Image 1: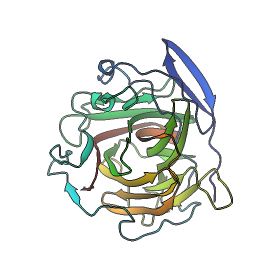
Image 2: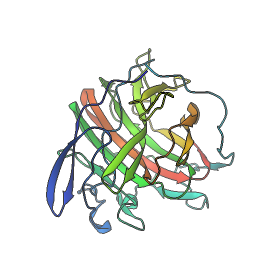
Image 3: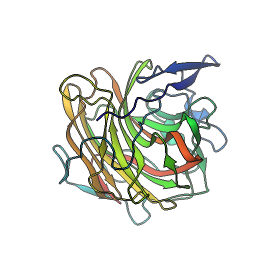
Image 4: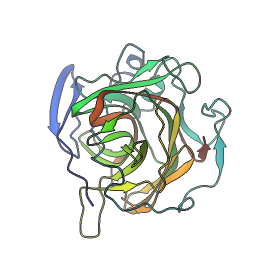
Amino acid sequence: MAAPPRKLARLGSLLGGTLLLVAACDPNVVIGSKLSWGQGGSDETGGSPPAVSGTGGQAVTSGSAGEAALGGAAGEGATSSVSDAGASGAPDMSDPGVIFTTGNEGSLMDWDAGPDMDAGGYYADPGVASPVYTTEQHHSGEGAAKVFINADGADKISRLYRRIGDYEEAYYLAWFYLKEDHVPSSWWSIFLFRANQNRADSTDLWSIDLVRTPQNQLTVALYEHQYDNGAGKQKGRTVSATTQQIAPVGVWFQLQAYLKAKAGQPSVLQVWLDGTQVINLDKTTPAPDGMSLYWVIGNGAGKLTPSESTVYIDDAQISTSFVRP
């Protein structure tokens, strides 16, 4: 069952020093150039204009629409090796399987580093604060990324992102801390995958949303934006978690996803919340041909009650093996 269509999102970026506002629905039009690596990442400044943007998320309710995810063990293509994060929970820099890692120590500049201007960064909608470095909370070390939005009825987003690159399968994880509890009236997304082509054609693929359980706690659900029911492309579907593992408020929790994606072939997507598998899709949306894939995390929502939302993010990692919480 498809969720209600998303609202129009106002997107913006810097082009030659001029702020351009764009109205678009999904897929979003993205126009922009990126600040140089040294300009982003302090605790005073926002991030770079994005290679990827958009709202990412859909209206969902507890026990809501969508087919139940397949349960069971790791799906096709998942590796069985395990990388321990260590006693501190910090990413293991010595692991040869680590593709990207950051403890957000001192700044957010790790997100901006890479071989080209679109390797990664962070961004926000016009009028919304970009992610910043803070020492208010941390999972390991001394600081974390702080992502604040005021979701008062219009779609608001503030996010960090990394391009996935040439590898076809990997594990993506980060630790999250919700400062406040919220009731989402439409969608609330903190973790997603997107496809982008030439900074002018981007498509949401999967979003991990925070939703309410029947017991009025927070858990996760997955929104598959490009779900194909066999009769042509649909706007999407919500996939409820197979177990209502709780996403706690005021406590650090880990979200981890395994994605195997290759153009023209069904993708495999699995999601764990604090080490418990909650989503397992072995034949989901194929990666779009000729488009770069991006992993995006942060804070985005339509309307939340209360509206002001702060999410802290730390110890993000992309690796070739599962990382035990």
